[in-house]
Structure formats: C-alpha cells, structure tokens
Image (cartoon, one colour):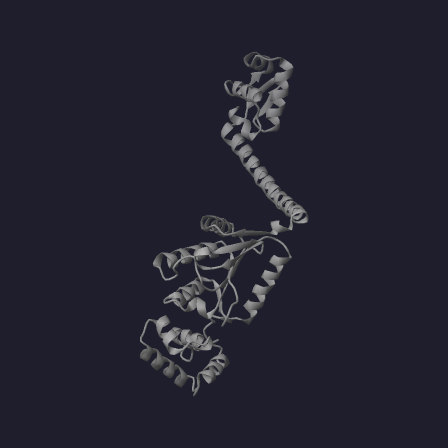
Length: 329
C-alpha cells in the first residue's frame, strides 16, 4: 500500500512524486526513466499530482514539487473535511436504513418491536449498552426495586458521575420520583444533589411502574422484580410513543424538587425548609422525615413545627397551601 494512498495518491503516482522531490525542475523524460514507465503514463501521473497541488509545471516538459509540508498539509485537511462530510452523510443514511430495517422487521415479525430479557447477565449487558448510547434525552420514572443497593456510596458516586458527564454533553435529563423512591436513607439527598447538578427532578406521590426512555428511541421497562427480574426493551413503535406520552403526562403532574429562590433572600426559604416542604407536600410523616434528614423523630417534629410557625399555618395542609402561595413548591 502506498504511504500517500490515504490522501488520494496511488502507488505509481507516489513513485513519480518522490522522483520529482529528489531534484529541481525535473524533465518528464528523466522522471519516466526513474519510474520505469513510458513518458505518456508519467505525464498523466504528473497531471494528477498537479491536480492535488503537489507539483507544478515550470516550463515545457519540466516539473518541480510544491513544498511537501504545505501541500500535503492542505491536502490532508481537505481529505479530513471530505471524510467528515461523508461520515455525516453515511450516518444519516444509516439512520434511514435502520428505520427501513425496523419497519421490515415489524411488518414480518411484530415481536421484534420488543426484547424481553430475563437473564441477569444479559439484562446488565443490554442496559449498559442502552445507557452508553444516550445522546439527546434520558427520561426516568423512578421507583423501587433497584438492581443495586441505592444506599451504597459507590452507587451514589456512579450515578452522580454519569449524570454530570451527560449534562456536560447537553443531554436533557428528567426524573420523576415517587415516595418509595426517596424512602431509603440518604436517597433524597442523592436526588437533590442530582437536581443541583442540573437534572430536572420532580416528585409524585405514586408511580405504577418504573421506566427509562433513551433519546425517545428506546424504553426500558422492568416487568418483574426480585431475584427473577426481567425487563422489556421497547423499540420505535406505537407502544414506545405511548410510553413517551405517559412520561410527559406524569411529568406535568409532578412537583419540582427544586425551585428558583425568591429575590428577597431574607424572606426566602432555607434549603432545609425547602426539603421539609417537599416532604410534607409528598405526604411524609415525621418518622420518614427523620430518616431522610438523619435526625431523631423528636427533632424532625420540632423542625416541622418551626416551619409551620414560619408559614403561619395551623395544619400541615395549610402549610402546603401557604408554601405554594409563596412559590416554594
């Protein structure tokens, strides 16, 4: 293979080019002799090299090389630009071909629109493949059970690192969490940290199932939990469209976990008050609030009472109304 073949120079032309480089203003006849070819064939090679900007004619039958550093650099840049354009066109064509292939599969085998996975190792591999494919959207309906222990430090670290990396790439990350999602000790703190990073996080009292939608092109939905967990991967279809619309409906009903602070900092809620309001609004009792805050039930009760006093509310329901009026929830 010729060294310069990557930039469009075949082996014979490269031999002629190297001969031109070896001496100033070379005659075609001498170059033909050096290449071991006829004058006509050598002349055609020189014309191709000139078209690439590598050599130029300096007189009747005489040629010289353009500076290789500048000529080859320009040629390489041009090839790189052409390759990037071609790659974009091929990528677009691949997407069209994939859609055509999927349509063909569905017309002949409707079962192809879903993958039902029940082997734990296969589930882990396919989930990892789908997660790595995220480019534009990552939408989650979150509820237990989980494949991993959410209270473990490594789980929090991996989730945080993954979320940060996706957000830096501009991925639209949204999570709808239910009461069960934030019951494990420390889970609410993790979710609030993800929201602080830039995840759009919302809380809903109940979710009937959990799901993960990637790029609006595939959805992962667990079918069972426990030791015999199985999941279904839903590919582009009416079923996937329905799951996307269902997520958007839950998203509209859910309450944001974090809201913009009011302009008057002196009258605005503290971070702890914001968390307490959201827990109360979600229906958490003092014992559950205590677990989330890592304090005793007595301390949690005292903090809730202080919050209600600051809101001038006599009941928890009234506290929720007053907090909403102030834009806290």
